[in-house]
Image (cartoon, rainbow, N blue to C red; front, side, top):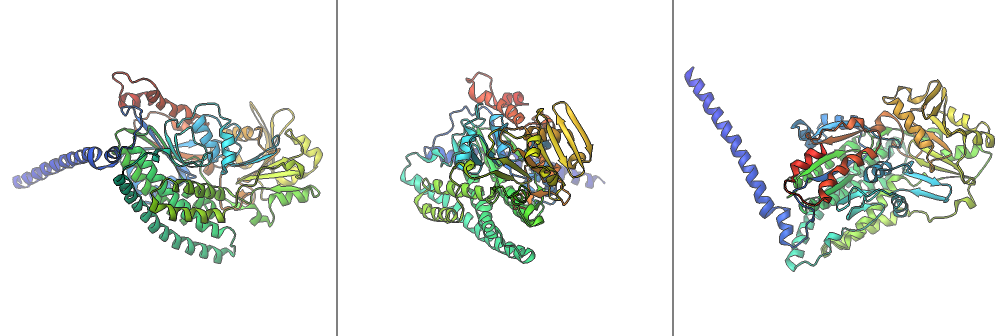
Length: 599
């Protein structure tokens, strides 16, 4: 017995010393990498400037996984499709929280609230301004720039960087941003010959990785498209989908990851990243499709690289991983009925000229943003990379339709239909002021009832002359006032997890100046959830999957994210990080002090 006890004691002693040795080697390796081998030391030896913000202040790194709902995050973690995020959660380095994403559940509205604290004039990804006779599509530079110029609050990302987004947030370095397709200015320094060679070799490894992953993704995309076409006998948008898989799942993903790693080494105080791959694949194949979940594996690997770079940075970072919204599995309206919503309205309004702008989808706009961003980026790449990158950007630009030129739609259109997935906005273009439910009924008796009873429509909402919102569905109706709701019958959102928040969101959207005179909602329609764009996964609406977003936050952050009700609440929370960056350096300030202030 004593021998057995001695053996156990020896093994315990060995395990204890082995654990101590691993910890010591890990710390020694980190110090060596920071000072001599890893990015910070390399960039310093090359003379590349670092952020002037004092490194003792805690940094902010926000990683957005576009379109992934809280429920599907948990599903992906359980199925080991996000193995690194699973590891972070199991080790307690991050904690998962569900929050209610404000309606409209779209990226422009989310980033407007997060970056500037306001999204009151962004009813969706696409909308029409009756007074200006202008159609807005937030994937196009001039549209996003004009909307961003209207924000009055200071941007969250000042002195920072953003990689992929609709708005810049005031960031200095921007890549793949709709409102400003500019290459990062940090690459515009004079470098020595060996520096240029070293950067070229570094980027050659990135290029080789992109080529290898691109070849694998191309084969998978072709196989997937062939299977889809044979199963559904539909070729619509499939060739575009192949280009999208390459652009968003490989090229854009790897480029924004590489740039984020560089800025972490440069100790930039705030960095924002947006991975689009899951959202775009979910649009084309559905949010539960194998293609969409396959994309999460690549995103997970990139997140691991970014988090590792943050560990070796000279600044300590609080890392947040979040989504802007979820997605609902939907049926395209025209696939369900054989006609578009605009064609249905034109038939029911005695042949008025109705125009729909849903043909060019969000996916095409983001592909255009990627192509133009790649073309701009090529100007600052080492010379061996410029030719192939420019050739690929030119190929994408040839195949993607440009934004239509601004024109006076009032001169020839009676009605404009703007589709933002499961929401469609209907505008009477010849009337500059918003129409009410009474006005629409006087102009087109029975139109609203026919829409509300359609199997492809969940409900419709309209302004009233008293300033309230009227909702009509096939089997019920309600009047949403500022202080409550008078409902009769059953409505699609009666079983919603957050019914009161849905009512509040429907009222808020319907009363927006740029929302349609008639708002058509496809969520939980009699025929199933419906999108008024051609897609099989949609968002912008109210369903539990769309509003059920997530945020993974550091464990020391004592904040109830479940109480988030407006996207602007994130702006208030994250702006507290800027206190340390903008105030003069005081004795005793440290990253720990700042973390306590944020908590």
